[in-house]
Amino acid sequence: MADVDVFISNYTLVDPEIYQLWIEGFSSSEAVCYLKQKGFGHSMGAPIDLIASDVLDHYRTYSLIELYLHAPSKLMEQSCFQLEHHTRDLIIEKYYSIDDVVAREILGKKLTSRYRKDLDEVGDKTCVKLKSCRRQFDNVKRIFRTVEEMPGTLTNNIMQHFFISNDLAKKYACIVFLACLRFETSKKKLQYLTFSDLLTCSHSIMIYWTYTYQHTGPEYYDTEMDKEFLLDLRELRCLLDKEKEIKQYVTEIVI
Image (cartoon, rainbow, N blue to C red):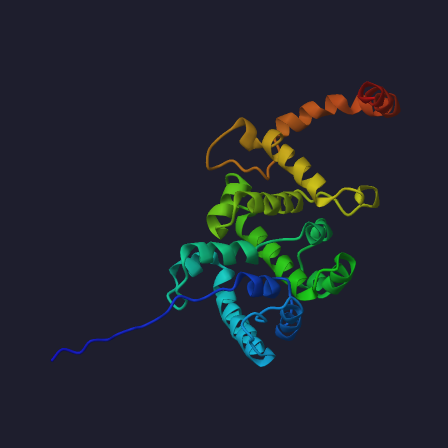
């Protein structure tokens, strides 16, 4: 009689609402209180102890999956958690989600362990939980280290290595680009600019001011400014002497 090894497993269930609370940095007890206030399980008459047990079980699962989320390609290859394609895409996209207000605070800062320790100030300023701020900071740092020296376009490189959507990859591309070129976005006179403003500006620069605009090929980077173009910009210096007149002229045209 032949011996047969049998492996039985169920698909890992991911509750979108509980996962979102985990992503936002809620502790399991805070999540239970939040769900109770929303009437979660009320229709089925589920006692609070059962809800707490269910939430804790979900949280344990997400903590184990998180190890693979640091390198999403490993999540694709692993066999410990049976995930449907749409569920896998959901947890990756949510895990790498980033709040614009947090991204704005990270811009212009060095991605060091020292700054990570001071993220409680970012949390207080943005009203985002510290755990979520740390997740977002770690994701920015991880993506930056992965793609900063890769040839080609940042957005495509991020999408290919982290399996996130184009819109989300553009946000990270903006952060990486501004960090690589060391734009001083934390200056006082630039504080009024939102992350959305900087996102628009950075992508315009990447498209029209870098080597990837004029050239194609694996050896070109969109984090490397076109030097010939920058030299041509010197001719515009004379306009700085007439800055007030130009501003007034543009204002009159707009009005």
